Length: 175
Image (spheres, rainbow, N blue to C red):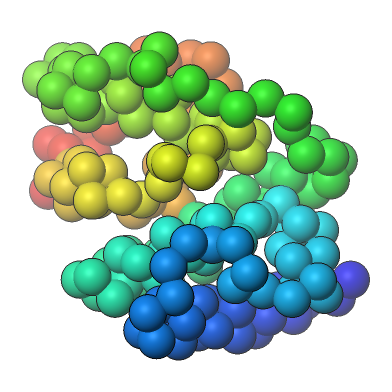
């Protein structure tokens, strides 16, 4: 695998997914051929990731290629260097996450985003969930945080929610 070419290959698959979605193809199944699917898997990605980006991009222009690439570079790094290129056999259960309206220190959505970001890092989000969805984007915009930056902070902080919360509070206050 040529690691250097990741952004170029990701862009080609992102554009491919946009084209299929524009053409009316719904559902991630069959979006990519065997070689493309193998490349995605070797980089810790699934067709669902690209489908979700295409769906939201066509529906409103967000999160857009740049944010998608940045998010998936962090995920890929975690997959290759922490997980050793091995896919987790766990699927997160969003029903166990805090409610969407939950807040910590006045920051709405943050309690829910913490387990969601950890699941994204580990490749454990169910197909029904997207890191960087509309609710996540509202949180990121309101708190002046890049989605990939938050994901990287969650990785560095590990289980230390207090460190992430303190950082998010500093970021929100700095705007």
